[in-house]
Amino acid sequence: MDIQVRLVNGSRGKLIYGSLAFDCALGKAGITKEKREGDHATPAGRFLLRWLFYRADKTPNIQSLLPQQKISTFDGWCDASGHENYNRYVRLPFEHSHEKLWRDDDLYDLVVVLGQNDSPVVAGAGSCIFIHITRGQYEPTEGCVALKKADMIELLAELDPECWIAITPAD
Image 1 (cartoon, rainbow, N blue to C red):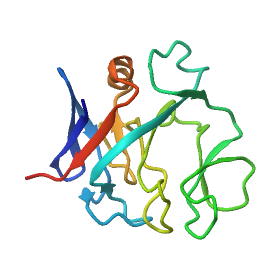
Image 2: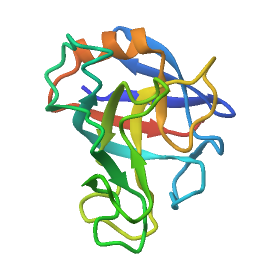
Image 3: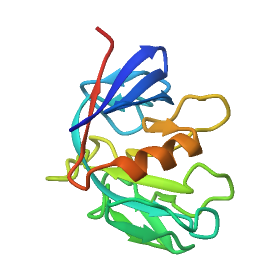
Image 4: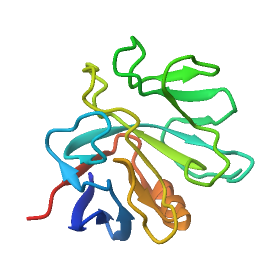
């Protein structure tokens, strides 16, 4: 069974998995079928959930069948489109552009990496597309799907380890 994500209005969406239904934040530019690095849009498509990164100091007893890794201060994700590690996990320090997974805010306390632009990686076709914790009252993201932390915890406990996410624009 796939997670279904649909655009509702602007950068707000609805995430549905079986009987679960949650509001979610999407990219500032909504959903696009032509994802490009820095376009602030959530990519349309069907993507495998690759793995879960989590802050064990903030969420120590996470229940999920997804492959998991505790986040450390050395964990990052390359978003330098010209680099050989573009859209891949990297160890910090890393001299090229990257996302730090260990953050001072709560956005990346739980991070599910989506299999978007990773097989094969195409330079400039988007990186760091995650499901993560929302900021405020579903403030727009840079292109990710974001949920309230309690909703994310509930979703993670129900997910099949072979789950996909299907992201579609509004009809």
